[in-house]
Length: 403
Image 1 (cartoon, rainbow, N blue to C red):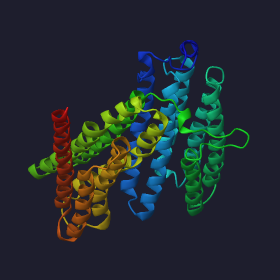
Image 2: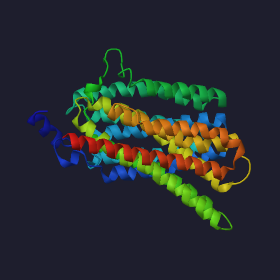
Image 3: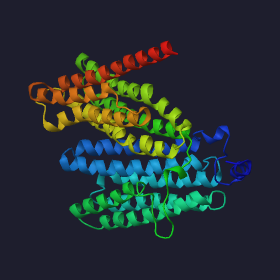
Image 4: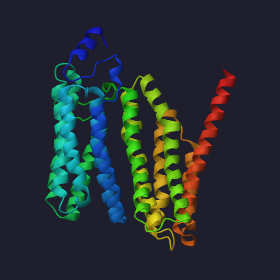
């Protein structure tokens, strides 16, 4: 980028100044915006726990994918638009209010709240993209054209979101799946629009440090939900005995282990890679936009598992309890495999073995009680973390010795 380009960015009413410390900084307006998604994640986990079935899992997955998509699109936008500038800050406040409406509608999205959910979601996606195209029109016309394409695709998906809101349950699910498919496929197609061409990953200049920190903050929100679940469930009990305290400690340790696996062994590497690669857009799309989906889903499912276990630690382990207890850590590890393979070029063996161990534990489910299965799954997760720690320490020691 030339000096003239940097001057144009620094004087823009919308864009982050390039080549300055503020380019990578996460603004307070962004952190304020994230507060809405605390409620969103709470709503998602509560809704899944209350309607835990095969259909409930599909519906929760659809809603979670929609929530993630609206959040990650906003993260991409604030990678370029400066939240410290008044028009962009106002955009975030409007999106925040719409996100509040979206969150409120989640428990009844496939019932009476369908229209509210669809309207809020479509308004966020279309409005943000159109605003960004307008904001970039003078200082960054190429990227403005990209967001014109994105706006066209979000308008197409919005038609299906809104159409689904006016139909019955089965038709709504089908139409919303089509809408979600349009949104998830469009980046892979380069948001191609007749007459406007298509985008390529080389067009997307991103700040790796900003992108990594934003996604890390969303993971923190999700991990915080697991702590809220355990605290709320135990607080509602009439008697807090020693057994419950031990089970609470195991639940907390499981959450801390997920934090360890993600932050200690992946987040920093990803930020460094994206800052030093020639195609930061490709890495950001793969490692952050897509690979974080199962990471977030695994944490939400783990929160549901903790609620099930703490509320009913004894008795028979039914399918829903076993699938949550084992599925949460398994999906979380799967996401970390995808994330770390994208930045290291190889999948961590510890994670693959961990998933295998969780699958093997499913054979024990009929013979144990919920708390026992939960403790075993937590032990597997901890073993994966220790294995990865020792493996990476050995690898780094070898590298130092060779140097």
